[in-house]
Amino acid sequence: MNPDQREAVLDNARYLREVRPIDPEEIYEYVDGQPHPAVVRQVLREHAVELGVRETDEGTFVPVEEGPLSVTFAGVESFPERYGRTLEDLLVDEFGAGWPDGESGDDLRATVRELKADYLEGTAVEYDYRTALAYALYHLPDYYAVVQYVLARLADHGLLDRRLRVLDVGAGVGGPMLGVHDLVPDDSVVEYHAVEPSAAADVFEAFVGETRPGFDTRVHRTTAEAFDLDATFDIVLFANVLSELDDPESVAARYAESVAEDGSLVGIAPADRNTAVGLREVERSLEAAGYGVWGPQVRLWPDCRPTDEGWSFDVQPDLAVPPFQRRLDEGDRAAADGTAGDGEFVNVDVQYAFSVVRHDDERMVAFRPDASRFARFADSETHVTNRVDCVALKLSHDLAEDGNPLYKVSDGSEAVDHYAVLTRESALNRDLSRAAYGDPLAFENALVLWNDDEGAYNLVVDAETVVDRLAG
Image (cartoon, rainbow, N blue to C red; front, top):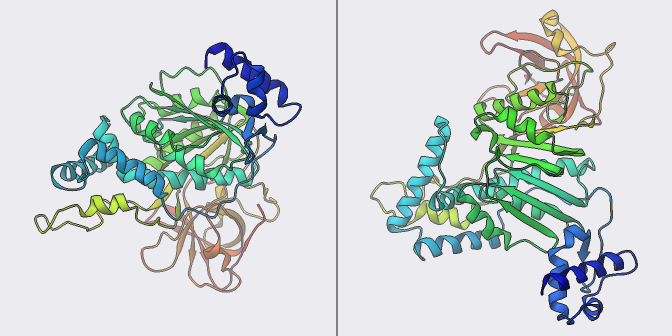
């Protein structure tokens, strides 16, 4: 189809979308040369986001409704097999059918080891194509899952639109893109821009072919620093990339300007201390520049800002082991090194830190404490050895390796870390252990103690303490 014919199709679609369903069997008759309806259908699919239309089961195209999208999300149990087959096709093309075995398997496992070592040492990684494949083997599943857990929170609050524009900065091999694709329902359209300068973009583009009509993906092979920000986006996503930038705070500040007025800048980082704390530092630098923190460390008290370390992360159920990771883990390594099938190359943990920053005053938790009733964490020094009533967000799973359950809590006013220690569970305080990450809790009669070993305050929750989950 030549450019004039394409424009004629789009002009007709723009007119008809306001009148009746757009039918390729009708439009082709109005275009010079009368291109086949199947060709017209493909043009409409390619421009679905621009036109704001979606394809129906009857083969026509109708306008996408305006307003927030609704998602049905009950967690992620496994990485979809169809995406796993795409990855294995890339591996077979590069290494042959026996990619987990012999020299190729050894090289892939060695590369994964190097990637993990470089990460722990904070060393920058140079991604050639084979390194990108090894990275995909190890990280695609967890990155696919994590972005869904984070964005589902925004959707639950009505903060994702049915016409969604996403900018994925440092898009890597495509895990977050696939996660967004599977989270967002078919009655919406998505314009997805991926910024990725490395050979990881070659792997990313292979997965673009797995996306449905109405999910328009565009890959920009440039660095985050060099990308030309000439549009606004509903979601600007930094997924596991801020820690790799030389100046993450200034890069995030630049990209925050491209967030739509009712959009969100979403940062995701691994759960380890350095990257999670680094993410919180970026969040706080944006807050100092005038942006609002949506969550998870909501500032419950007006005009208060936390200055604690900020190490907080969520934990979700492990994924099922993807077949490609199992094959990599086993390979044909017999007793030579004694490591065949020991799980070294299986990565199904779903643990992550996240941050959402916005232009407006929307918050993950809308509750505001009553100063006449509740004590602030900023004043905990004056309450040591006393029992107080307070409110806080639960910001961890159980952190205790043994002994009494221990949970990080925050009210957004603290200068040092606060933890709730459950010394005796009862029906009256059971909400502490049962609450989810980010849930607001009210503590009645909690004992405040200073933990000199950890340099933190403990809220002792015992038989005299009542803990209730609050409505957000």
